[in-house]
Image 1 (cartoon, one colour):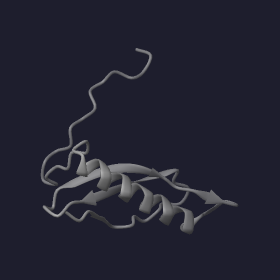
Image 2: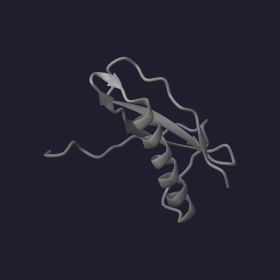
Image 3: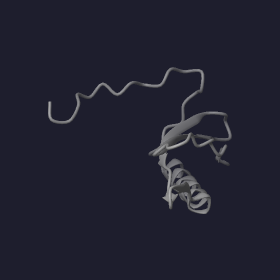
Image 4: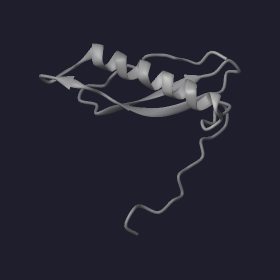
Length: 86
């Protein structure tokens, strides 16, 4: 089953962006990906490599069942764990 994503726009100064991966059933999985900078500018080549690496990781994790894709119409599950140290 193919998994795809759309390269996100990077807001000025962003340290990370959310990328949503979509499987062949139209279900989604999102994760945050760091934005690399070189001399104050986004390093596009490195960012493209980060995206490719994350895609391979998501594909592998989906193949062994440790990534859960969800219906995009569903509300994401909130993290209800207390902050670290509390």
